[in-house]
Each structure stands twice: as C-alpha cells, then as structure tokens.
Image 1 (tube, rainbow, N blue to C red):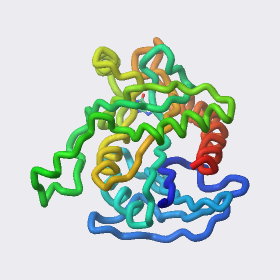
Image 2 (cartoon, rainbow, N blue to C red; image 1 turned 180 degrees about the horizontal axis):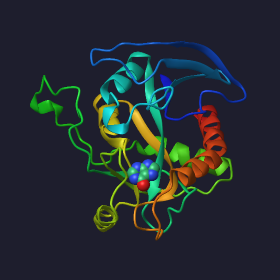
Image 3 (cartoon, helix red, strand yellow; image 1 turned 30 degrees about the vertical axis):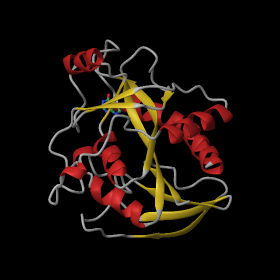
Length: 246
Ligand code: HPA
C-alpha cells in the first residue's frame, strides 16, 4: 500500500501525535508543485501534506499547477489523496459549517491544463470519469466523520468555477438548476489528474458561506474566515481519524 496524501489547508500540518519527518521541494516534468512536500508519520502511518494554494496561501485557484501537484504526490509513493476543500453552499442542506463528501462534479472552469497527456495523446487516454471520486475512499471519509460524531452530508455535486472572483447570483442560480449543491474552485482538474495517474481521490468539503445571492446579502470574507476557523478543528479530527483508519 502506498502513502496517503492530504491536499489542502492551512493548519493541517500540525496536530497532536503527528511526527514531522521532513519537508523538501520537488520538481516535476510539469514544473513546481504549490509547496514543499511535508512528510509525516501518525501512529505508524506515513502521510504526505501538500498546500494546494502554497504555504502562505498566495496561489489563486486558476494559477495552481495541478499537474505538478498530483505528479509530485505520485512520485512520493502516494496512492490515495484526501482533498480538503472550502466551498460555497448552494442546496438547502449546505449551510455554512456543514461538511460534505462530494460524489459528482460539474466543471465550469476553463483554460486549465486538464491532462498529463495534452502533448502526447492517443485514443487510450480517454479515461473513464463517470464517477470522479473514488467510492471506497469517500466511504472512509464518511466513516471517519461518523467516528468523530460529526454530521456529514454523504452526497454532493461540486460545481467548479474559475475564480478567483466569487460567482454572480445568476451564475449560482444556473449552477443550482444544473444540480450543483456546492461550489468551489479547485476540484478540477485535481480530480481528473489523480484519475489519470491511477490515484484514489476523495474530498472532504466544508461549506464556508452561502453561495452568491442565497443569503440576501453580499459575501463577506470575514464571515468565510470565521467559519473556516471554526471548522478547522473538525477537519483536523476527521483527518487524524481517517489516517488511523486507512
Ligand atoms: N464560490 C466558489 N468558491 C468558494 C466559495 C464560493 O461561494 N466559497 C468558498 N469557495
């Protein structure tokens, strides 16, 4: 079995019981990943952490080198990626603070490198992507949340927008009509690149705001940051439980 990677957030690379082994830069044929790879060990399990937006959170969603990130993880012997995502809530059950495990994606992003085979294509590279998240890994996240006694929504369709701006109210209305229950900016091409390299991929999403036009007010970054801060502990507990379980 390979290693587990945690892709995401601030605050995840330090928690009780985690031994940090090393941290080093990696380069790939597709360029530099967003940050150094941090190798850790928790209860005898090897874990790799990667900050999707860079160590200081300076890389916007459309500028992330998704190919380098996924390639670097593969090279480190990772075979399962847990993606932590902050999202906007669209459906009624996705109020700020609610955790979910998406099972579908609709991609509205554009001009992002979507494939490792862009310059070396053959028909065999039309990979199956009917179910973009790895079901057993999704179930592991759900189980970990339940072990922690946290409510978690078991199905969600993640609409991926380009960013870095948030959406208009009309765009969110359209996403809702399309069947999106949450909206974020990073699930694509991350999920498809993981699939191309044969990595299991699942996500734990935390809703940090009502999506545009749904609360009757404009979206406040301060509110988003507050909700995110409040959710950090839960995410950390789920991640530690999950690492133990996997
Ligand atoms: N839209 C897109 N991405 C997001 C949002 C949002 O409302 N909230 C957090 N990430």
